[in-house]
Image 1 (cartoon, rainbow, N blue to C red):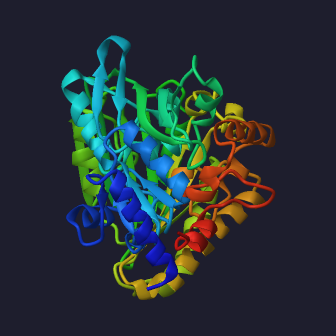
Image 2 (image 1 turned 135 degrees about the horizontal axis):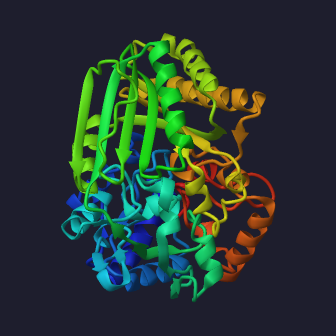
Length: 490
């Protein structure tokens, strides 16, 4: 065994002495279940020396104090949905698994809900459903509360309520020295502002307090069609109308063009937060149709989840642009020619999805580090999400290269046409993308660095906390490259 692995085990045993009931080793059921629940196979292939599962904020405080005294690198995971390798897992260090911190507590008189970072959104919606309320959370059941909110978080209600992070009114945060603080508009206000896009820089959040709103029923539908250029053009044009329509902020639409095992398809997801049934975006007959009216829980479970296949190996990339139907059509056509040689690979699926950042969503982010980068709400924008999935590890190099090529194509073409916006949505980004450099203006970046110095003056999280996206230093960022290079340091 390497020095690193021996050292890792030694430091895990130190942790075990202090917190015996919380530390789990390889081959234990707790260890294996955590690794098996990562969204991507690439994340599952990393193996921490031990996994530690805190139950309360004081446990996290104790863990960070031990990590600091032993100089132990660690990663943190809630739902484990971020897909790039090393984003929330580690080789050779220890993993802080927040899944046991999954409390959901509704505070009716304050119109808010207290959420543990390890809760999943389907469990949040199940708890809210009997009370006919909802919150601006994730749209896929297995996504964790923590990762979703720390990356911004696109919700069904984002056109009116903004991103999930804009609906957090208080963060309970454990700082690098183990101190537990609250960050809100009245207490540690500077940290509260930075926590709207913190990633792995400021602290481990042990509770999110989120605004709730009355939601007796919402309507949702998914339609899948055989792809034709005419159909795609119609879907984009109709979704553009929805995207521009400030009079109806209840609507959410996402359009994806995809190729699945050699077949080109078009997918349209429509949601109406007021529960009003909407016409399909096209009169064409779908080959798959799912539709329901009910709680957010019901729509996620019966419509959105049902349209998603379980993933295997995956690579994502994202950019933000102004709305341009001709551009969307051109990108898919050019992507098809890039991807045609890969049609025969095992269980390959790739897609390019478009979803809107309406002005209402952008304006809700006014008190957030990303507002200026989003153009301060002057334009309607769209998020473009490029997703690649496949089964065989032998195809990794070829398909990761192809995914990179698609991302480069989309960005280069958008820049040429003058429609590229700098913002990179953290939750869909690849580990190599410069999220902070592009999503935060220089003035706000300086402010974020100053706040970082105030709350982590010794830079402990820069040295020890692996994964996520780090505030850039002189050049570049410490994201995937750092995670890859430092997995075995312990």
